[in-house]
Amino acid sequence: MAKKNKLPVSIFELVWYPICALVILWGLTYVVLGLVTKYNNINALTEFNANFTKQFGLNLYFWGLLIIVIGAVAGVAVMLIFAKTFDRASEKEQRRSARLNALKKDDEKVVAEQPAEVVEAKAE
Image 1 (tube, rainbow, N blue to C red):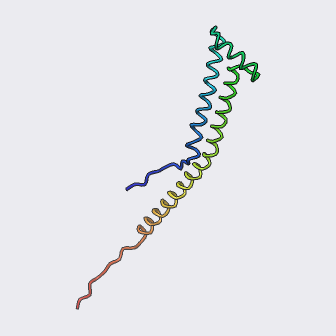
Image 2: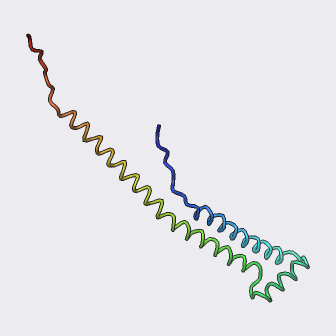
């Protein structure tokens, strides 16, 4: 049976990708709320944006952009950390297959260069 080629995926990687996605979704929510506040006159949302700006210094739209950038940078950092692991595993597999192919070629060459042996039966 053929061996399946599985990629090494760690628990850390499986946890951090969804966390980064949730952070980006959180920032996207702020961006959408900021745009809705800017282009629609919804009193409750306008007051919330004004209080948010007074409390944190930036409005919802810019905080959303900042949070999206933070989530994207964290996601790229996780990818860079684990790309090294994947590269190491793929290079190991390539070296292993190259050695196996070299052994197969050597075996074929040795068999092809052997002279034919003639065996005669002795009469008794």
